[in-house]
Image 1 (spheres, rainbow, N blue to C red):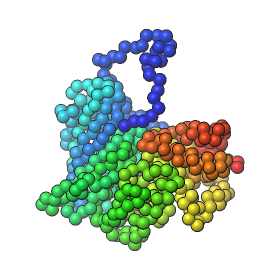
Image 2 (tube, rainbow, N blue to C red; image 1 turned 45 degrees about the horizontal axis):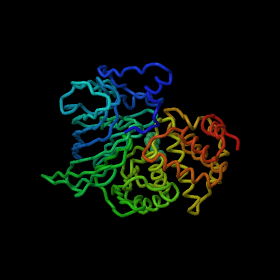
Image 3 (tube, helix red, strand yellow; image 1 turned 135 degrees about the vertical axis):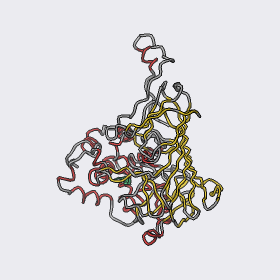
Image 4 (cartoon, protein in one colour; image 1 turned 120 degrees about the vertical axis):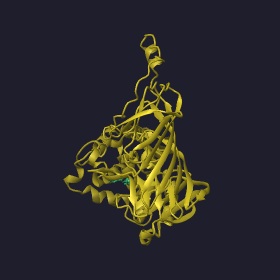
Length: 460
Ligand code: TRP
Ligand code: ZN
């Protein structure tokens, strides 16, 4: 589902210009675009349709790491489609259907080009079923490392930011197109399965000949990069936090550093709900696994940690539930809207729990050498999108400088209104600047220009 501001409809535009509206060529069907032109990931996502739901059936053997997937995608055409693309870089496809009939398909790089027997009229709903078997591999990016399907000693875990979902899931792999998900996973009895959202009752759908099937459901709209399945040996804890189910799990091999995960998760989410507004999902949690990817990921409702996390990492990943997951990106260059905010959440947490003040953290960083300031926080470059100094730290500094400028009362109101107005939506940086200006009542363009779009140290 796409949620963005409505543009002036074509007919209204034609009338305004005093020309007759162009007749809708109901008979003209054209291909959906192969990408959405994201400046960092131009091939990610596809044009001409909007996904509402992914219904996933996955069979996994932890002994061989073999996978079989059938995914039914429920979508709606947004133009008359002669064909359309999915993003997919996984194993060989066994079959593909559109609206229940076999459809032609071809693979070109990460594009899976699907040609249905009949064109799909604009506005119509359609289903695509894709089935594959094999062994998915994480996407290996020179600058960003591993993303997607990550095999572990005892199973596999999915962490797909920014464009790893295509490694295992044929999808509209863009943060612009959120959808709900169901996961029906069959694996060897004794292997634990975790995913986003909640286990569907009864948690275990069936056990047969040493294999068991469980079902999970994410009922709030979710970007593909936030979709998560984790399978392996896990120790699971269940409780409540901020009024919802808190379900955490850790791999026994990282037990030592994971003892606090469950309570840290509860405490973080309860504090964050007070500062950022109502928690946006129907359950929370966390998974500590041995992944060796070198980062944690804010997978929706239930982040994944590479090894047992410290408390501030938990605070960071859970802050992303508001900033990144519920309030999603429309363009990857705005990544500071995720990382700057989640890092500032850490500063605020420390400030309110007997640690250093945000002011002192800011002051220390403000003395950083020239190299710290050499990138634009609001457009760091594709290969540097997760760089700590320009995106995480300077992003957080931007928020602290804003707080200093507009005052605590307006600043904390702004945070809550930002998460509330854009709940389950997608945003660009301009939306944040507009809201900040509206609440402050004065122009903030020079301020944000200096902090986000100038590759040097801003004056304070
Ligand atoms: N978004 C993650 C975080 O919480 C970081 C991350 C995701 C990352 N994918 C990455 C970092 C790839 C480096 C490379 O901060
Ligand atoms: Zn982060």
